[in-house]
Length: 179
Image (cartoon, rainbow, N blue to C red):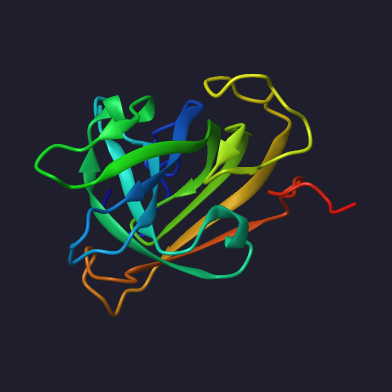
């Protein structure tokens, strides 16, 4: 992706894509903190990788502007993988997954319309009021929102906080209302 032209302006029209949020637990000791990985199918045709961002706050706080660090692209296997990461790099667990449509994409800004489902449990807490019955099942895909990622042009692309993320107009609470 080069320049500030949108992909559509360059004649590239994008199909709905898949995304996943992984909770990445780091081993002790580790120079990196436990974090959440946002992985997005790449917008460019013939690119079979996942755009990858690391966030230090959980998805339920993404309605506030959140610093995101761009990571090197990941392999598509991470859309479905859960488990240990090779070379003692921790363990990942899927906590959200779904599809999205590209609203806008250029070098400095990504806007996506997400539709997602949630895992039944995350760190031992229920994520929604409905109980699906087993660990491997997802709730239906009733939740949606607009996710915006904006690049901080004063920082190199792969430096900490090089992007800012915000989830807006989402139609779901990440936790059930208290009774």
